[in-house]
Every structure is written in C-alpha cells, then in structure tokens.
Length: 576
Image 1 (cartoon, rainbow, N blue to C red):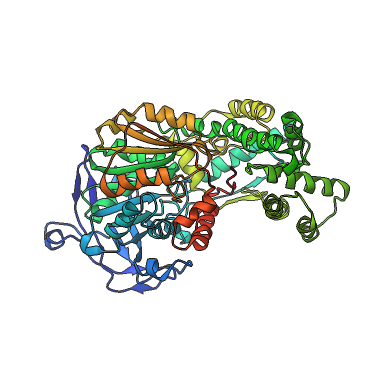
Image 2 (tube, rainbow, N blue to C red; image 1 turned 30 degrees about the vertical axis):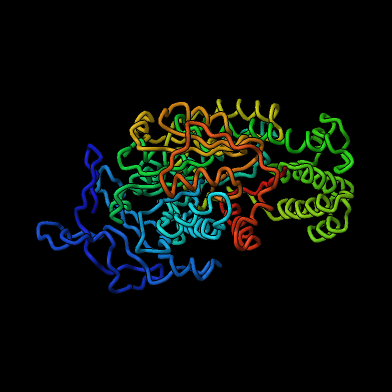
C-alpha cells in the first residue's frame, strides 16, 4: 500500500505478489504486483496488503498496429477507496502502459487522461502511441516525437468509476421513474420544465444511493495517479491531459506540485473555478463558432453553398428547422451541415413518415452543391444527421433509472458546488433565447439536487511551485472556450501557453495536426524545452485531414483519430 502523509510525501508500505481475479471469476496465478519494490517486500514488519498493480497476460485487440500492441501492457490497480482514510476499503480500476520503444534509453513515463470526465484511458493511450509514433521525423517536431516514442512509457489510467469490467463502473439505479422529456432548448413549456426538474432529482437521488459515490471525484482520482506513479517507481509524474484532463492535471499539480515533471494541459477548462462555470461557458462559445464557421462562411460564398449572402437569413435557416432536425444539427459547425439539415427538414416536413433508409437514399442522390468536395461533405454529414434523428436515444431513458457510466455526473456534482433548480431553469430559459444553436442542455444542471459533501479543492496557487506547466489552446473550441482558459493561465505565472489562431479544434496536440503546435509541445515533452510565456501559432493553410500526411500512414491515422474523437464525444468536423 502507498500512504500519502499530511505533507503529501510518498511512502510505499506494502506490496506482495498474489493472485488476481479476472472478470469471469477465474484466478490468474503468479501475477506479481508491480508495487513490490525490493527490500519492502521482505520486511517482516510490513503488514500484508492486496494493493498495487496486477499486470494481465494480454490486452484486448482494438485494431492497433502489431508494433504498438506488442509494447502494451494491461493491468488492474487496487487502490484505497479513500486515500485520506485507507481503512475504508479498496477500489479497482484499469491501467494500460505502452512501453518505450527503446527501453534501454528509457527516461520516464507520461501519464495521460482523455477528458470526460469518465472516459476510459485505454484506447486513448494506445491511440496516442499510434499517432505520435507514426509522426514523420522530417516533419516539424519530428525528432521530438521520435524521442517521446523511444524513451517514454505512455500510461493510460481509466479513472475510478470507469472501465471494461461492470464491477468497476459507477452506474446509477433506482425504482423511481424517469419520465419522457423533450429537448431542453426547444421546449421551454411549464410541463417540460417540470419533467426536467423531476428527472434531475431522480438522477441525483439514484446516484447518491450508490455505494462509493462520494469517492468518485477528482481529488481521489488525482491521488490514484500519485498511487500509480509511486507504484511504478517514477521520480516525477509527467502528464498530458485533454479537456477535463486539464482539470484533473491542475488538481494533481495543486496537491503535489513538487512531484510534477513536465505537464501539458491541452484544451483547458477554467480549473480555477467550478464545473458549473465550465458548463455554462460552452453554449456562448458554440454559438459564436456556429456564426463564424457556418453562417459567415456560407454568406461569403453563396455560389458554393446556395444559402444566399445575408447572414441573418442563413441563421434563420437553422431556427426554422424541424425540432428533431435542429437537435441533430447542433455540434456541427459548417455550412455543409446547415445545407444537409435544411434538405432533411424540408423532406420530413412534406413527408413526415419517411423512414431512415429512404432518407439516406435521398441524401445520397441529392446534389447539395456544384462544388464536388462540398457536395460530398454535405452528403456525409446528412448521413450522420439522419442516423442521429432515428437512432439516438436519450442518455437518461424513461422508466426506472438505469444510468450506465455515470462517472461524468458523479465527478461534476461531487467536485464543486452548483446552483439549485431555480438557477438552472432561469439559465436554460436565457440560453434558449440567446444561444439557440449552443443550446440549454448542460450536464451540471443534474447537480441542482445533488446533496453531498465536497472534497477540499486544493488552492491553484500551489501550481506556481511546479517546475513547469504548458497550456495548449485553440482560438475557437466548442467544449473548452479560449476565454476561460486564458483566465486559468493568468493565475499561474510560471506557466507557458501555445495558442493557435483561427481554428476550431479540441485536443490540439492530441492529434498532432498542427506543425507549429507540434514542434513546441513535443520539444517540451521530449526535452523539457519550455516555450516562452505565450507562443502564438498562426492559422495553418491546410486542414488537419491534409496535415495527416505528416504521418507515415495518413489514412490509418485519420481513422484512429476519428475513433478517438468518437469515444470522447467530439463529432464536430473541422472546417476552414
């Protein structure tokens, strides 16, 4: 066991080898816990414990290259349920490690987190190994990517409450009945508001009734990272976190500033504030991005997009869509999306009984634009929108509460305080009027009736004690807007930022698509070369899709990236 003392120093207490159960209930003999460190294991004064890391014989085959798969280990971590009171019992979560390509030259490990919260880390860390490892040496930052691949392990921890094993996942259940509710933005009737409030209360009560719920939070997850870091005998915790991963990284750094090595926070929440503040910042940003990348771009090119040159009239196209089409069109920030949605809405208005297959066929036969690329993009997006209209179901389904994978709710509502129902109803009404594209559907509204003690959020001023900290941010980001990110940045004087202008992107360095960003961030992770306080990268001429040519197998890398984005919930296509 690893105990963290009041001054946050580390000490390994116990670590014996033992047998570990699989999900089937079978026992795997002879798997040693990695935390068993030499003299500690033979000390007769140390009590026996089951805590540590058990490495499993193999990993699931998820379509990665044989080279990356061969370097990957999968394991199960058993850690204290409550690191501040280890006697309360244990919790288990999954871990993957992609070993350095040249282990004899190994320099350390880079811990990773894909965001969420509640996104498992396994696929993400193997995806990073593929994306970063295939980056061409001759491309900007290529030498640094090569060094990362050859000399650093990549560690992916699936945060507590997540994982492939049902017993590890945090789900919310109750016999209370979730009632049907309409779209939060489009239906602001008294009946729908009542349903929204009632359902939020059912979710809160159902989640709070579950075992271990109060220990599904960022504080315990950050301490899990420290537990694993010590178990792996790492001198420092190097870190790459995206989206919510920036919140988690900042939390860890504030708890253990002297243990931080090189830390990259990509696409930042404002980790100086609350989850609620992060949630309500998204809709205004999405609205602005929609206006710039969809409305203004279409108005500037009427001959290509066929929606005229009046921005107000183009914006009205979205507002006039049928509600179910409008809901499917949100989060797509391109004129092609609006073109597709307009056609689908027209077809359904005149033939409401059209089925999915017929609509898909109509979309493929329809000519959206005389521009071949635009036409094909619109067809592809139409397919996604039609599938969303017919196949998507609410995350919280009517009937007895049965919410699988509820870590997102537990972390958001446990970490920081949120407003009550009156606050959220007022905010939803305001956003429905001001940001019809950005929308009023905000996860943190489920915290309105969440009555639970919060962990102590460590003071962000502690980050000033870290050796270094690097933020990465895009000018436009539909999940983590730039303005809150700059607010966080201003609060940490020893941090640097690499900022890219003119693009709408989330997870800038994750996908290695922007040469200017790549060379600065990769050099920092590989060599510790800290950029100046603020480095501004100009908007690139190419789209990320064409920039995948910086990788040795661009088509394959693009498919991996699309899968990584799908898992993270980022489906919005890039538009120049």
